[in-house]
Image 1 (cartoon, rainbow, N blue to C red):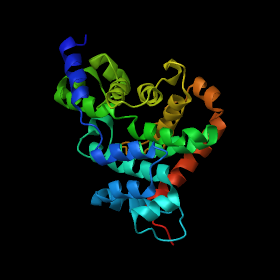
Image 2 (cartoon, rainbow, N blue to C red):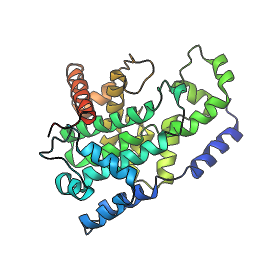
Image 3 (tube, rainbow, N blue to C red):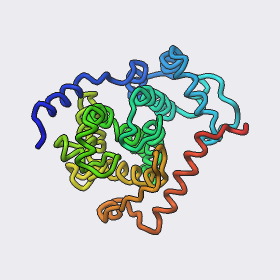
Length: 284
């Protein structure tokens, strides 16, 4: 039985988890404003040297295939547009949050949660562009933050490592074990975090139901996209200590997305190629 005091501590921790770095929050606000100028966006991003370096590195990867080397944020905005640069900034900011936490208990290698989350973001965007292109930027955010709840639960799992070992034969924490031990899983905790950060409901639901999208209120497509993208990246083994996880895909997901057993392998290949391109420097 779950102790009510433990749940209270978890919920309190959720309220105290710091929001995304200020520069990322500001960029999100600016890119949602139709009146904002490229110069304003450039000014905010350029104040952060590490962020600027990460944006330029990604800009010059083969993934974007730009005809010239990008050497400034203003050039990046001109060539790639507000929303793409926004996604780059968000990736860098989320990486700063994730990198501080040891989540090996979830089968992630060092910095694996960052790699996995970015991969799911790319997969979400790939799927969304086919199913509903207007959703692709929100889908990227959903993929990036789908496992954010593991930051909170990971701390308590490490504190109770011996108890967990008695309950489970596997050293890897599963969602079933989370539900048994905490009375909630990392997806539910993630939705509380998203709500605390004032994210839109569609995004909060996608994070909260990325394992069971058929149970989300209104069954939003974003939740299904995030679910499928996560499974694809688990099958690819991105960020995992022990790859080879091959979770089944629900009939509901196939119905909602139009994918089938025959086309999932092709999707996996497409996502893997996209990820390889993000780490490969452009030849231009």
